[in-house]
Image (tube, rainbow, N blue to C red; front, side, top):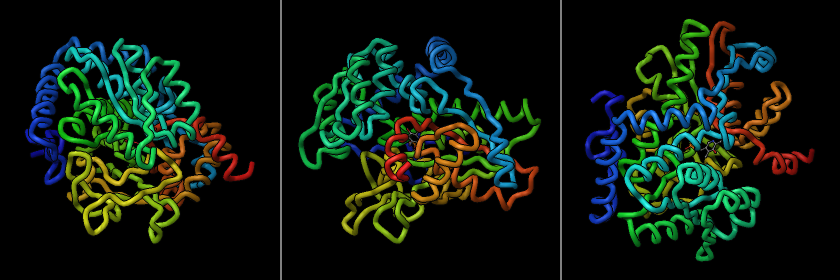
Length: 397
Ligand SMILES: *Cc1c(COP(=O)(O)O)cnc(C)c1O
């Protein structure tokens, strides 16, 4: 099976993915898959989604030549796919709109999700406000205290915010809480997963919604430069922005694709989230993938300076692409990330999200040893307003 036809009918990318869920939930997931396959091929759905991409999100996002950054480093030319300029400031709106629209087309009454730092919550609440469907977001009380601006935005956008006070009062407990609510009426609710993870069909659907990013970037390169980039790179948390930009280039053998995981405080410490780099095969949250897990198979605590990257699993398609060698994966640590964050801000006037700064740091690292006629494309997945106060504190600005 060619990569572009994946996953197979059971939701597998090679040995990864699938539906590791109880039988009654499998029935529901299969229904979502059938509905999605039917709807995705209708002009009505595609036209509505693409009109929202252009009129609401502001697509296509620009392809920007970071000339001053490239000159400063003195090697390959660096280009940015500006997902930070999307409405709500990141790539997440691309799949949240797809999920909210799917819920509407399926006649669901409520969209549910958990959120950690609040980025997925805000993007989903935005999409649901636009589409006109109820939205309920579960969030740990510890995170609610930490992420005040996002909490306020979700309230303004009209979603129901459910504080979670059990356990560690963070993301993990928010997942359990949101999932329990979902199971009360999965016929009428849609659980909107925030990345290319979870049981089939979510890794496929979220990839399809995000693949607009790479499709645009590839066309922009061909139109503006009459050639393709040599390297395409993106940060990997669950893997949605990376698969979004990689998909269009999978068949281009001359284009190297490189995903960047967070090395946090170092791969020799427990404080990282380098799932593909150091993980092993297991299952998590309803699907099979590389995992950072202990000997009993329980997920290990993970860490990154970028809260959007600290997930102990990773999308199944990335696992497959790593195994077949089509995509390679490397790491960037907190310090390199902060350095790239400041450099891009000061040399180009673009404040990147700390997540995206991992990909920027990697490009900076490899560009200097590459000839000047080579081109590196970075998916700049989001803007850094959310991280500005934190960075100023850490660097004592
Ligand atoms: C959430 C987020 C990520 C990580 O998620 P992926 O699914 O790996 O893309 C990366 N960048 C930004 C700006 C985010 O908000």
